[in-house]
View 1: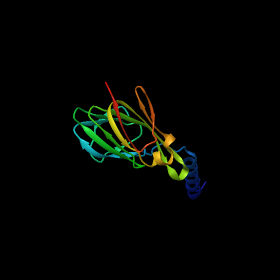
View 2 (view 1 turned 120 degrees about the vertical axis):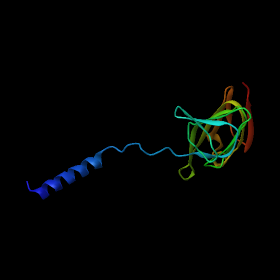
View 3 (view 1 turned 180 degrees about the horizontal axis):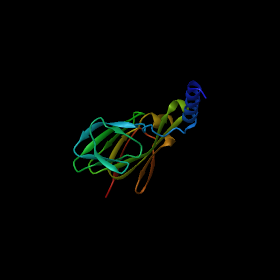
View 4 (view 1 turned 135 degrees about the horizontal axis):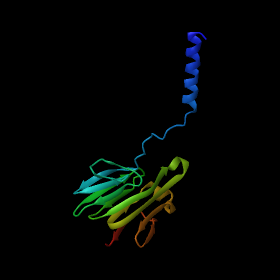
Length: 153
């Protein structure tokens, strides 16, 4: 086999293997919101790691947001929902899908302790049944545009 034919065969085989190799899930998760206001000590628990929250940080699905004593935090989500956490609050977004062009809308979250104020965004306006907030004692279905939740210790 001549050298040029050998290189062509190797090149074609490499192309074949690269073409049929499964795509790796290397894409990073998509941010669902970001921190607009921050006061005091706020932590983000993400994938079993805790980091100090900073103004402008992105928020991802399944992040746990924890505000310390005297702390507060404001988050704006992609659909323009605004959430304000008061002191000593734990809040998690379990489900967030914002694809209005495909009619895919969902906002599922939970508060385990503390105080939370929500000003609903586009998801609640287009599909109110798709917005849910769980508390230790029940689930809130969002029908209005603004509400306050306080969960005792």
